[in-house]
Image (cartoon, rainbow, N blue to C red; front, top):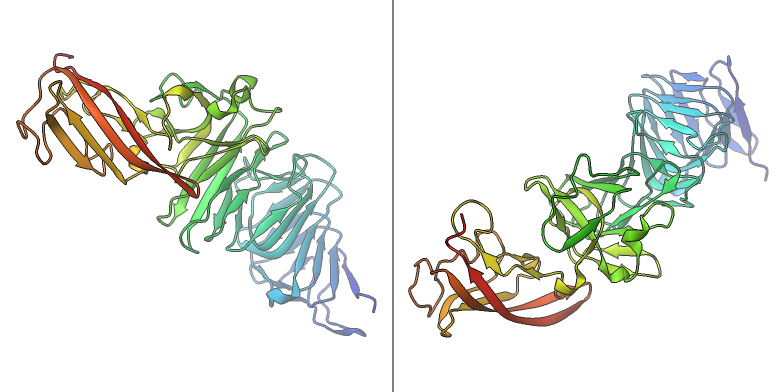
Length: 423
């Protein structure tokens, strides 16, 4: 049976068509002020600009071909998801996608080879099932538009030739690979599944040096070298979930100094806006896919990039021990920093003086409100609740490092120096 095909041309008024193959309910014009229903098995094409006005309603359970500009100030959706409604942007020139209301597409195709940035999105798109990026970049950056992938939505065929240049939102509790890029490069970011179907995360890729806004000289821990060519933004827009983040390196965009061997030294780092420096989020490297994944859930949101770290100082689970403190209240090195230990709450920390007497003991050390600040405390400690003198002490740290689906018992012993005279 031949599929009925309707061409809506400029200047046509609304009409109702009954097709021989079935009932096709269509009340439409290029500037739609009423109702347009595209039934299953029906194709509708707009050869000129399509404008769905504030009073317009478009329900697409068939196929809608958009060959020019598209505006929606009304209602655009579908009746039944089982019908696989498909909206196809296949223009003959750069297409502007505009409007004040969200256009809800079940399936959508972007296929326009007239220019790399073929789609200028200042409107708002919701993808319910699948977006196919065939050819042409969808640019929201600089145009103010938005695109959100709903709970079970995904994308296919994404590449350098076709992706989103700008911010992408994802709602739901499933793993998601953001189809983002910049300047003709597809540089995705992937998050693990959030906890709730209502959670929303957003991400964007920027092919620029982050140093001006987020100085690379301000680092914490074992960070040696920060990527000076690109960065990603990941934000939690709604909900309380935390996620694991995966980023990748590319020969086209990532400096060779970052991706050099050994690749095990590549970690993900985050700009901590509260502290004003870069922090290490750890790294599990997959050489085959050229990706790096944080060891556990990220510790915050905002700006991320790749960096190289002093690998020999990193313990399993991304833990780094800083063996000096000066508890003088100046906000610098006021407590024993065991970076990353808060990610592994099944831990114990014991500290002894040079004669072997225990002066501190705790479990669940977290680098915030459960720390060693030079005060003797814990069960069976000597001189309890007293400030300890300057000198060398001995620590024993035990923790279970959970990395992915595996865990490892770790024990580390070493020396700690307290300097109460450092002002």
